[in-house]
Image 1 (spheres, rainbow, N blue to C red):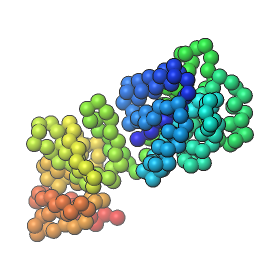
Image 2 (image 1 turned 90 degrees about the vertical axis):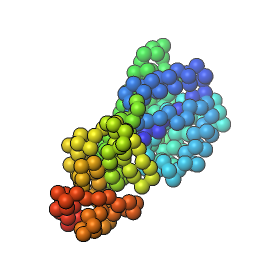
Image 3 (image 1 turned 45 degrees about the vertical axis):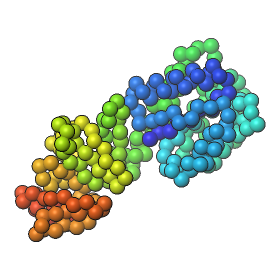
Image 4 (image 1 turned 90 degrees about the horizontal axis):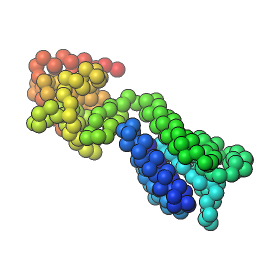
Length: 251
């Protein structure tokens, strides 16, 4: 997930930017969330410090009013974010272009620098453009690490690394399947046939079950049972025994 943080000490602008960000995320069905919108930079620092272990390898986009009227300036907040989270995307917003040079001197390397003017459309367009760029970068990072499994859950598009999936089985509810990972089970609308067509790396072991061959730890041929890394066992149909053997032996 792309986490978006916003720090702006002018109430009208804070509300305006929140609306722009939230609407753009919703309309495009991004796997993203406006995590914090605040006028106090301490809120940003506290959250990132508290959740550092969980979010260190996640993508972060931070919008900062560089001219914060606070004990911690926007420039100082940007420097802290850059030092603590080197991969974070930072966007500075200000009314004075002189701060651009201070950001360059501080080697913060922001993604963008938005100078406020009388055109609200310009600000809205730039914020949306930065969101799209950061989200595209987030997806590229995921693709570099591992193949993705995307599915729609309600009005949201969910994205999981394919290797996290243990099994997908037909649900007792019509036109739905149940996806299993080590940490959760998720039911969503789809079919085994459609998923197998899109993800041939998943192994069909019987009419209603796909398993991830990377997560098979044992295959009892005589009992026709595969055991996955979560210790769950699934029955293999006679016609798919050879497929399972082949998948286990594959390098």
